[in-house]
Amino acid sequence: MSDEKTLFERIIDREVPADIVHETDTTLAFRDISPQAATHVLVVPKSRYRNVAELAAADPGLLADVVGTAATVAEREGLGDGYRVVFNTGADAGQTVFHVHAHVLGGEQLGHFGRYHQ
Image 1 (tube, rainbow, N blue to C red):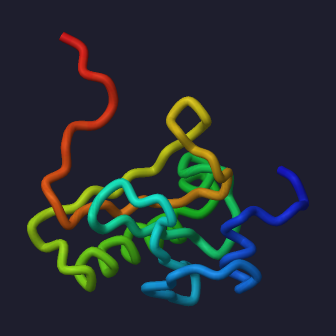
Image 2: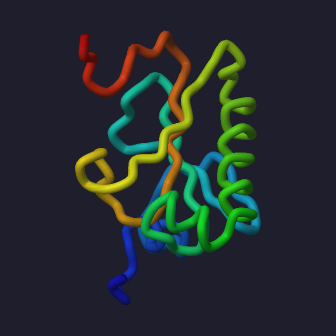
């Protein structure tokens, strides 16, 4: 892993502005700058792990904090009719920032995701 800060670490350190919607001791939640749904919030742990598998292996409690923050964000954003929490792992899955993050998506009827094969 590079010693250079990721974009998310720069947001956590308040070096890059973001529309922060929730913060805990271990997580930060902010609006995605390229939303894929009416509500699209990213939840990141304040400690850097490349992806959700690495986080789960190293610190399951922190993974639980990320998921708990996602649930809190969904509640505060009024997503009681349903929401999706997505972790992209690896470039083939669409991960572009290699600091694990959960996408909280909702606020509208969400379509299917991934490719559909018969």
